[in-house]
Image (cartoon, rainbow, N blue to C red):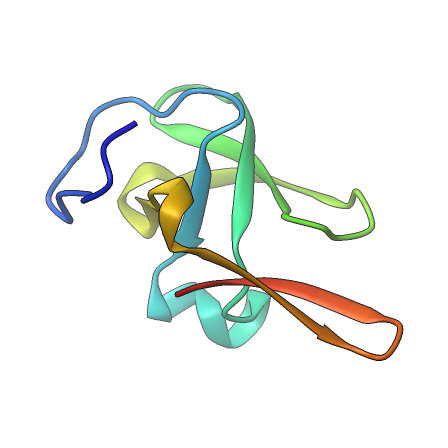
Length: 87
């Protein structure tokens, strides 16, 4: 995966890719990083929060998902809470 991601990249996503969700969904889902679990009636995907509790969000449209280069992932820890954000 390249270090720089093209924001206009609309290629199909692969399981295991790290992504962010668009601001339109961030209010509901938070500004966390997510991982693609599987395609679901392409162009919709099932995703789960990276480092989360395993809860999966199905049927998310591709237009709301942006790939993140692995070099941009930052682990943030606050006591027992760990989160991953784009750095």
